[in-house]
Image 1: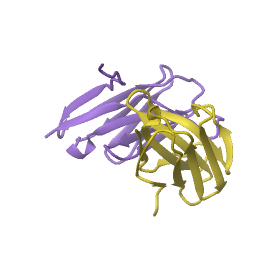
Image 2: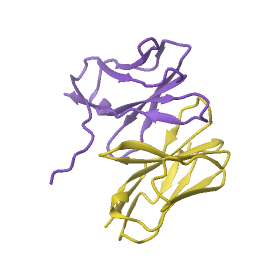
Image 3: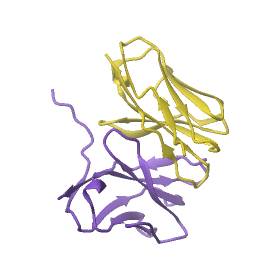
Image 4: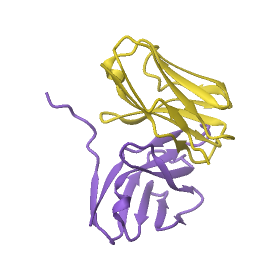
Length: 113
Length: 113
């Protein structure tokens, strides 16, 4: 069975550029989560969706970050403009909602030069 | 200057011994708990979960214990193997928040052959 699929796996770009990270959740899951992981701050929840609707975006660090979920099988996290401090591993996870485990993708390693 | 990051607790065990990883959670209203394993370069992988109406749950070589009185969670790994070397995270679902999880900082398990 396909798990959560993220693309790209690695992204290196210069500061100021727009970055778009993509996620395909597990089919049938109705909750989707975006996380950021750094050595300094660990694993942080940025935003999550239930049934394609953003529920809590309090973890989004700045207006430069935005996320969308146009349908049940696709979500994007966009950073515009990007800055070196955005360098991190970004994970997407999905779950069946409520008290169901979240299943993670293998992440996108983002480096902003 | 030298960067300062999270200083993960580290547990070092001999292959074949049992491992116990501990976690203190923060919210007495949390009703669902999960343990994840994260290997280098990969996303967190679901290991086992437990609901607050239980105090023990067993899986294959793993057992989770929940003590709600002192808000403590532990993961026991029997006959630890080199493949168990990873960072282990506990996570709590703070109830009625659509599946939102709060993650601990993680414990690094190192298995010596």
